[in-house]
Image (cartoon, rainbow, N blue to C red; front, side):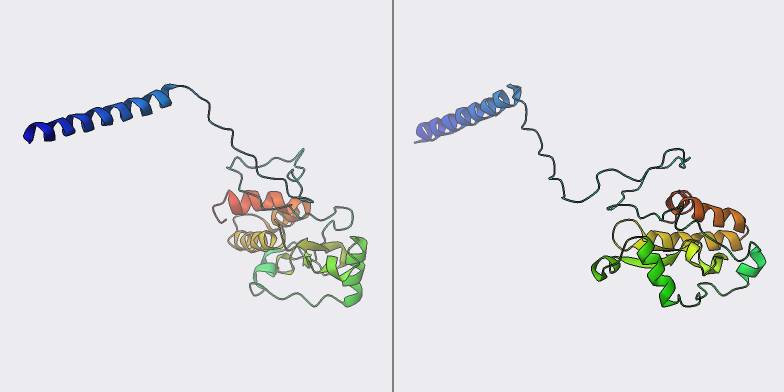
Length: 199
């Protein structure tokens, strides 16, 4: 009896060794693995990022940008300010509410940008390029439609908040903050929010 049991154990051991040898042979055969399929392209979605030619971007690890970057037209919205005095700005309450935008101004901005249908207008929020609590003027030259989806309104609002903190702590001048927003708010977001560790 013990001899037959031992024979079974020997056969099991041989079968196990043969299985290991088969696995090792398959692994060493050098067959290339199948290429990973690329994700399908999304119709209508921009493949490239914003045009940053001629712009000095801070030396940081670039964050993942969701969708398109919403930027105002420098011709339609160059930015405008009412003061460059940091004391005046910092004596205002944080998040001071700007006077309401008159409906004719809202319509003029949306029309200038070509967003004339209700469906198009629902994708944007009218925003001040230089915010009111950083001395921004409440004129058409300082108002633009910021996209709700992608990289736009929410990142811009975050940038406004951080820049006000930096100005009122006297880390940067008010003029520097205003110019950064009017020139390219997205680069200001990268420099002062992302590179500053506030993202």
